[in-house]
Image (cartoon, rainbow, N blue to C red; front, top):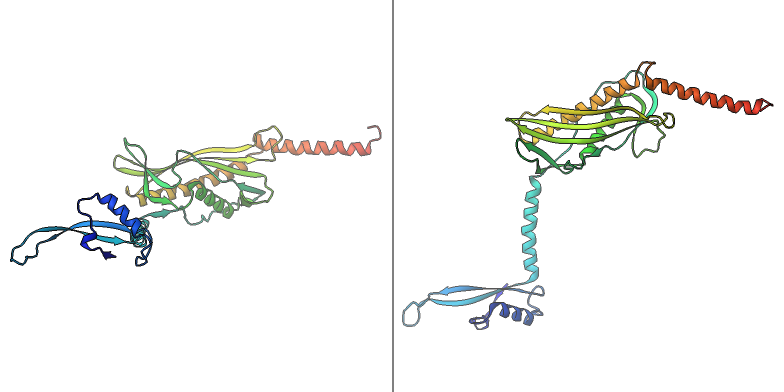
Length: 299
């Protein structure tokens, strides 16, 4: 940074044009830290007494030259400072709770694959959403999800089913293991609702269990449920809403486990059980017919 002599400062000329001309003239000045200097002219007031002892107010121009490197450093400091300040107030939330201790008696000798749950397009995948009475849903921009909410729900349901021992093996979608049953789902609603001075966490999801060893052309759906869960929040703060949604996810996992266990332990006269028995009988009939091809000379 340096000053210019008063003789070089503009007086009754176009300042913009003067700045451009001066920048071109001194662009290669080696005394400056970098090329492309920025020039700022400002007005100074000089009221020092003259030789007759009188004080005359004199307006003079002063010019200060900044290098582009200095300006870039100054602007970067300001921007980075603002960025770090904004980052400090942002909260990244995730769903988590202790593993349930309930275990199923007698694991089904099959493998269950849990597909990644889908997220409804109406749900904000990045921010917490709170709906107030008579108003449109609003995203709380400083309360963000650390991961996709549907992925977090999938991981917790997969973990709980694996620890419950309901199936011999419970794997995720990326597994290459052969499986018979598949669990898929979709998150339909995930938000906080503030109404009449009370706040509650709302979670709505649809879950379906598929059997890929069902007869060809038959219904592969063993169980299909739609869950709507509401959990009261202790207050209307975003943190309380996140805690309420976390409890709602826990309840969803428990209810899915109970419904799966009930669906797989149906009575023998249940249509789905008869379907499995018919499938086994059909396989046996095919095997017998194949054996006849080799043993009966008349065929």
